[in-house]
Length: 219
Image 1: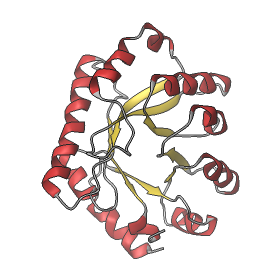
Image 2: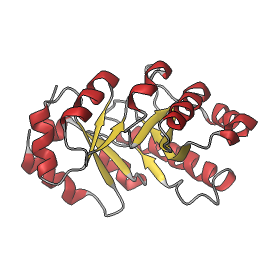
Image 3: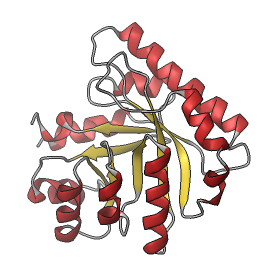
């Protein structure tokens, strides 16, 4: 782990941008060391791993789930998760609401959009998301809070393409905000940008960046 690199990254972040330290595959000791330096938000993409770390690490840590989430595993993280970044289907959102109700919580969520030119990435397109938001059942979900959008750019050295993909996500965010969330102050987050492209993401309007290898080293 590179503490100096961590602080140099912090210096590049505007005040309105939050850093999620992506700690998947990293040790309890490394996470705790970074927490002691003041980092509060950590991101994981495997349910079994995040639940184990939640039990072993300080409860002040805010845990974000940043990977593809299966509906049958929501129940394991519902009691403590602070933000689910990658809601990519109506059925998943329905299950999150169900498990949040059981835990007597309101769980913040982001809607994931497919903006990359890679089939391996998950996410809504605008039309399918709109269909979900117009579904009468959606309005009955009282235990979730949609706080914004999330997207992953194509893994490429073509910065023009990266800019365009992030611009697409920002455009989606603005359209959703004006059409469906105009009166919802909590709908304000754009989660985009990782180690290789977070500076471009910030330039295009990201409010949350997810950085792992630049802090913890390669996996």
